[in-house]
Image (cartoon, rainbow, N blue to C red; front, top):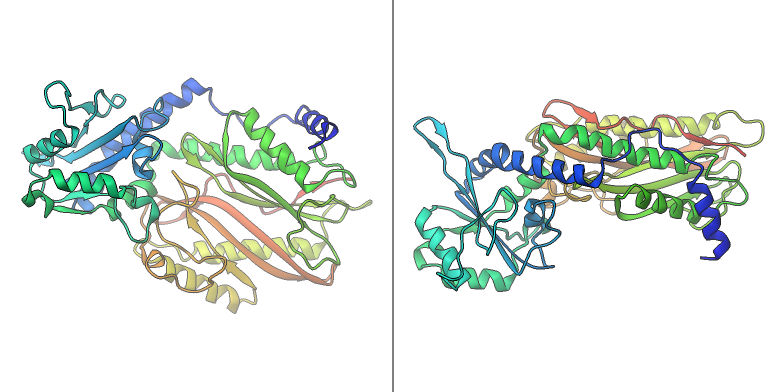
Length: 437
């Protein structure tokens, strides 16, 4: 990038003031992360372990090769595992009417935060694996869950070497009790608790504000600014807020007379329809947003009516999809029903919605794929649960009388499903962002 281009982007950054509350200071973010983790271990995990019939959950990782689930259980001041980190979660059950909750142990040289208590003294037992085996034998669990899965990558975090060591150090009787914790891992990753929701709403609001600022007169000068300039502006804004993006912001455009619906690295001109795909991470929660902006021509006060209708049609596809959400229905059932109803209404949809939360493309039911508009085996057969979050991602084509060609509206907005209804975490786009000449 040229020096002039850098100066241009920096000058744009100075012109925009966010309209939403800025993210918490880093120290306060750490407190929130740890509080939420404590609440999840205390109040969510016992029920998840019982629902999935796992008495003990063993998570094992070595530094910089973290199990995706274990990474979500580390305290805020642990950016990675240390040496070999072994976490043990044991359901102590309900005794005499009292729920004793989950015992959280670290087979490590030290506590892992305030939750996982040190349970290994290398001076007394130099062998970490033998100490793990002793902990398991002492508690005598009937089903020992490990993170191994054929189809859900984030539930497949136990590497071959660590599994071999675990099995070699367990007595034969205990080896027979080792089972996949696939369902437990997915439920842990996909389930959101009430304490997370206000922070998730704010995260989505911050992402939407970055888009609104980037798709504004302050950033975009038609005839000069390129889609790449806007991408870099958004990258800079994310860094300025001390946030991270889980994928690079992508800005493309559609133009009357051009067949390409995703023109990249193009100079923005009046009459263009811009599109962005942006995802940030805040308090370990990920967002995923796609929205559009229209660049007004001289004398225009709004986008052409046919483009506005195209956006409205995209919203209709969203409604057809979310109307199908129900506890117990599989991703395939939801996807196929929504697709059929949208097509029957004369729309031209493509649906590829995914769970979101600890990971941008999270674990849970697959609800269509962009390149496979059909039932998806296994991951599409996974059922929907309450208190789970989804990125409502889809597109729809509408013929524009003004452009005399199809216009593709590509939308993505983050939601929470409480078991009865779908709630957009910070609203959804129903009007174009407008950029003036």
